[in-house]
Length: 165
Image (tube, rainbow, N blue to C red; front, side):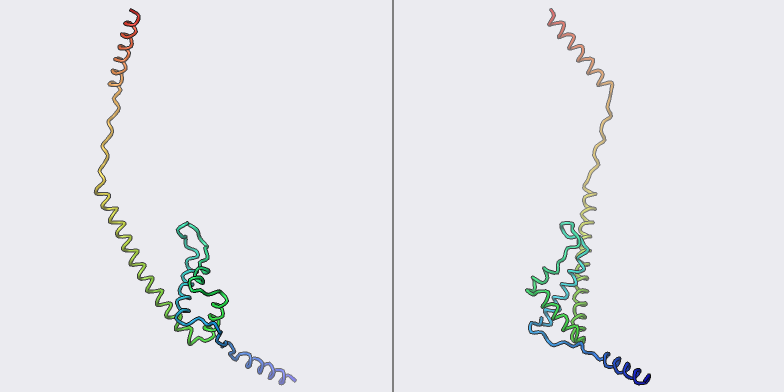
């Protein structure tokens, strides 16, 4: 009895380990080249979710914009992605190509950022050279102010005296 149960368990385990994950090709399958570009854009969109945009907002989902760009819906993408992931020999070269494209774009953007930063730093250096120091303010001289006030008082007295006479 024990041997028959053990044998049954082993048969079930061996048959369950068989790979049945290759799915049929969907009717509306996204072509490989379009799928590659779509996945690249989706990876960028999901990576940009935690980065602030121009409006200083985070956690904005750009995935719907990607679907609109390629004129597909999420269901079609999921069916195509499921099919490609079931065929690893087809999906792996697609992922390798996406990795290469993303690395090329990263290199291009780092070069552009260095150029932009160098231009910004050069402009700062030029502005430092052009900026002249402001002249020092003259110190306030109380004696001159007092003299002016005394002259005004004398003038008022003389006017008052003239008006009385």
